[in-house]
Image (cartoon, rainbow, N blue to C red):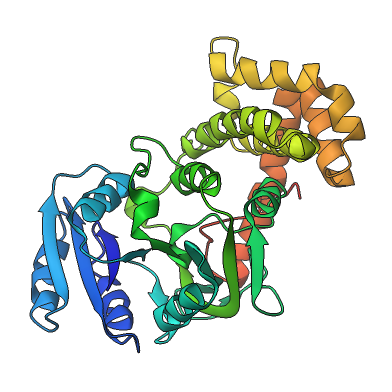
Length: 345
C-alpha cells in the first residue's frame, strides 16, 4: 500500500481538485491522509466531506505548526509500505503512482522520482524549473547531490515515492524552510541512488498572492536565511564525504548567498543584522572562488562581485530593476511562481 500524505491549511479553493486527482489514481491500493494543520477557513470541514466520498481517505486535525509538522504527523500515522506527498494546491496525473511503483519494483530503488511541470492558476504552462530527462534514468546518490548543488536537480518530496524504511530515522525538519532539500541530502547518504522518470505527472500550481497577504517592502521570507544555513551544512558534508564535489558545493554556497542578498530588504542590510554581516563577510573572503569557480555563470560572477563590493547600492538598483520587470510581467500574465527566478542566473 502507498500512503499519500497531504498537508492542508486554508486550501478550501483548491483542495477538492487535489484530492480528486489522488483518488483517480490507476494504482488503487492507496490510503490518503489529509492532515488539517489548523485551518480557519472551513477547509477542515471540507476534508470531512471529502472523506465521505472515498473510503481510502482519513482525516486528522491538528494545531497549526507548518507543513513539516503536518507531514511528520502523517508519517507517524501512515500504514503504507511507501510514502508519497502532495501539496494541497497542486494536482497529479492518474498514472503517477503506478508509474513510480512499477519503476521501484523493477529497479529496487528506495526512492523514485517523477518529473513535474509548473502551471498558472488558469492551467497555462510555465517554463520548466526542473527539466525532465529524455528517458528513464537511474542517478547515483553522488551524482544526484551534484545536480542539486548545481541547481539542476529536484529536491521536492512531492515528486518522490519513498520506501517506508527511509523514514525510520528521518523526519522533515520543523520550524525551518527549505526542508525538503535538507531531508533529501540526509537520505542520499543512505541510498545508492534515485530512479528518475521523464513523464511530467506532478503539476505545480503557481498561485497569485492573496491581497490579504500582500507583501510590504520590508517583508522577507526566512527561506533565504535557511538556504544559506543548508548550504553551509552541505559544504561540510561534501568536504567530508564527497571531496570531488568541493567546487560544486562552493558554487552552491556562493549562489545561495547571492539569492539571499537579492531578496533581503535594503532596510535590513545594516551592521546590526548579524546574519547579513556574516553573508557579506563570507563573500569577501571567497572573492577568488567567485572569479575562478567553473560552475558559476558570467552573470553570477558579476552580481556576486558587485554585491561583495557595494551590497546596499547594488541591492537598491536590483530592486528597481525587478520592480520594473515584475510590473511588466504582472500586466502581461497576472501570475507569480512558487520557484521564481531571482534574475541572477
